Length: 268
Image (cartoon, rainbow, N blue to C red; front, side):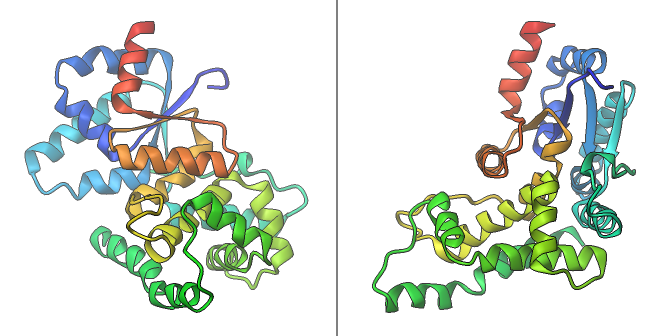
């Protein structure tokens, strides 16, 4: 597996694999012969929630075909963060996120709660801009730069919330900073949450840079460091994850399903 590129599909890419029918046969054969396929548990959860029984069966038939080649499956984001934070808490000096075993084999509520969590402070945040007679930052990077130029309290509060929830501890800012530096999956998830904070609570909807991916799409960011290629058929998620990967300094190709399919089929 060491020298085999790892690819992960978003739920939208799994859907396209089924929708494309016969066209997918060559792609499936190519993936099985030349790539290591890493399932994301969040995608599996969404496939299970597919209401149409025929489509659901077709999706899992497609997954079964992918399992015939080299593959594994990563835990959902909550369990993955728990495992990483517990490993770091036990041995922060020698922590290596790559050595932590994270493979394993209420969705609608989660999506709603996620958006509400970031929409809730919007009124207060907009009031601050109004009082200081300032316009909200027009881009995500400008918003993050403002946070970093101050004390970065929001960044570390998000990090502490995730760390404490996973490791069941009361982490110091120094520990959270160390973990964020040492653990790309954690770092990517923090930037995903900062992106949602900017999109739903901060930006001017008329002129601000838009990143409107939903909860599950953003939670997928935690899987980025675990693969070489992340494939999605959702253009909004593709844009969001590409920006998150850049902000979190994660080396990965975030590809549209069509781009992956076309470029891969040319090489096989």
